[in-house]
Image (cartoon, rainbow, N blue to C red; front, side):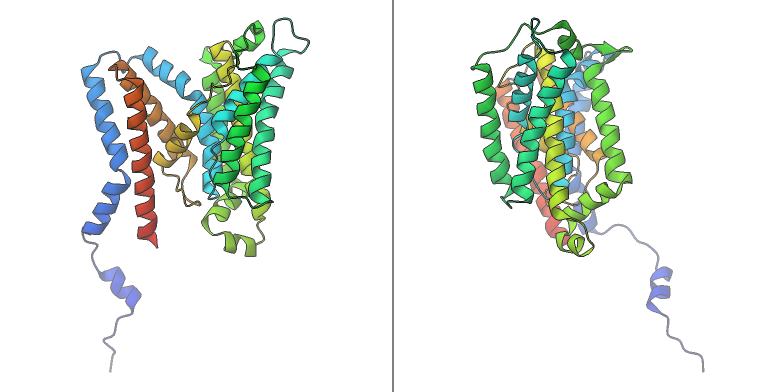
Length: 334
C-alpha cells in the first residue's frame, strides 16, 4: 500500500507563496521609514526650488560631503565590530592644526611632509583608541569620549586657540582640482571603493563582520578579536586625519574646532545607511547612501533658509529615529 505522507520539504515547496504578512510589511515600512520621509522631502524641494537639482549644486554637495564621507567610512569599520568612535570630530581639528603648523609658507618642511604629519596625528589617536578598546578592554564609548577631549585639548594647545593661517600654496591646492575633479571628491571616491573591496572581498573584511556579529564564534574560528578591533579604530583615526587635512586646506587655516559635530554626522550616516549598532550587519554601499542623504538634507535646509539651530534639531531627531529603527529591528531578529 502506497503511503500518502508527504515530506515537509515537498509540502513546503508545493505551497503557493502568498502575500507578505502584516508583520513583514510593518518591518519593511519601519526599516525604510526614514529613507522614505527624507526622499519625499527632497522630491518636494526639487519641485519647489529650481536651483536644487542643478549640476553646480550637486557638485557643491559632493564637495561638502567629502569629509563626512571619510569619517562615515571609518565609522562603518568601527560600528561593524560593535564599537563606536566619538573622537573623530576632535581628530579632524587636531590633524588640521598639525598639518597647518608644518605647512607654513616659510616652513622648513615640504607640503607632503606636512600632510603626512597631520594624518599621522590622527592615526596615532585612532591607534590609542584601538589599544584602549582591544587590549585594555576599556568600553569604546568611554575610550573614545576620553580621547575626544584629549585630541581637542592637544589641538587648542598646538594652535594656542587661534586659527593657523599663512599656509603654502601647495597645501591649499589640496582643496583644488585634479583632471577636472575636485581633490576632496576624488579622495572620497578612492576611499569608498577601497573600503568596499576590503569589506566585501578580503579576509580582513570577513573578520570584521565576524567580530561584530558573533565574537564568541569568531574567537573559536581563530579570528583575533583584539587585532581586528585595534585595526578598525586605527583606520578610523587615519581617515579622520585625512579629512582634517582636507578641511584645513578648504578653510585656508588649521582650526581646532574644524571638526565639531562631525562625529555625530558620521555615525548618523552609517546608521541611516543600515549599519547596525549591534555590529556585524550593513555595507559600505548603505553608508554611501547615508552620507549622501545627510549632505543633501543639509544643502536643502540651507536652500530654504532653515536656521542652523533648527537644523541641529532635525539631525538629532534623524539620529534618534535611525537608532530606534535599528533597535526595533534587532529585537525582532532575536
